[in-house]
Length: 540
Ligand code: GLN
Image (cartoon, rainbow, N blue to C red; front, side):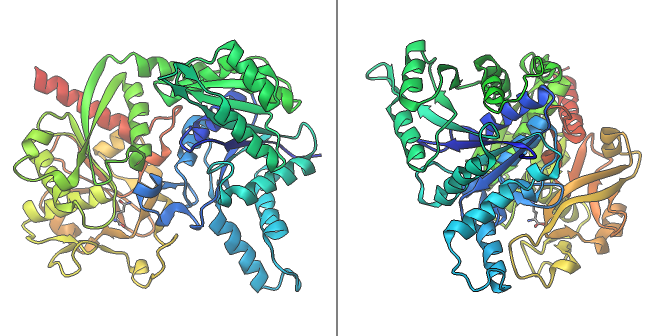
């Protein structure tokens, strides 16, 4: 008897069909019916984790409470379910191989030849069941990254095939997500790619139980019947996933399509009445009926790819809804900012966020933006590198420390106001070696940060190597900067503010990772509120 029931989500035809959102939406519906649901993602690439990937490659790196650097889909899982994820929820081929090779080195295979089948597939199967075996979950949904038919996906598909067989009927099902393209010249939706993709899955010994069809146009009954017939599933197991104006509409769309019902039937689990989406729908209601609009600038260097700042964009949606405000985000490339165009780019904004990042590209643009928002009293939120650069700008232009910098950008700066943590000085490996995960912070009051949280003890997630240099704390504070959040154990500065400015807050941590639909992040909520206030005042 299995401890939990398993749902595997695979993808066909092309990537970017929204497997993560479908998996998260289904999980939301099952959770809203009273089930305890876990979501996890298995990624076929060889990096041990996405921490070493450039955001252009793979979008944002999402950090969990336990400090795992993971795929951005885990962010969707947390935002939809409100349940924290961990290292266990995201596994890559690199991690699988690393663990199998370490076992081999320890002699655990007792002289056997170590092979993809069974050793790699066993390792995958074991990890797929880790959460299910804790007894904390009724249903575990596993998203398999990549597309069926890819060489690197094969061990995962084989592991799923074996696991379904081990688990037995009604204990595991497969949802296959495909694309039903619309050919405008023919004026028709085409099912052939779906048929082929289901066939590829079958060649690997897996029969899809449910087919979710991503489409730009409504699927007719006739077309659904055709897909059912050729793909060997019941008519009600053909689910349409039509383009949505917001990802937060997808759970309701899946409810209408009956995805959760079909899944529960196939798993032989009771429906437990109707899902309770009261809170979710109240959020949607606020999100879709804003009373005001604010324009906020997002200054960063990876702005060409929206996925690079996924959690920040989503946190603004949650915080906007909480304030009944629509946040229009303007992305601003920090490399294109200079003193000549700064007024034109930032002058009309109600708030500016300077984004996290690594390396010196675009840094001077960020500093120009910071000087502008400081001098023009535009509400400002700085996250990680954004906070560090706020300290640099203040040191240079207010505290009179000409040439101040972070040692990340200039090792020989005369005033290293941001510098490498002592514990980082001997680190040479890049992967998983930053200051990662949840750390405590004590807030001082009065401060904007205290007003935002309404409490003095907080815990937030981190991902950085460099720190506010406490050797300069006195000088900077004497010039008007205030350190309003400190790590109680290490004395590291986590939050800075400028009391002379209406709302200027920089945080060394990443608040965006903890914002969910049910609990919008208090700092984003306060920032959007400050932006609205500024707008109403300037307009007067
Ligand atoms: N590059 C900076 C550091 O490592 C900031 C990192 C970040 O913004 N996440 O400290």
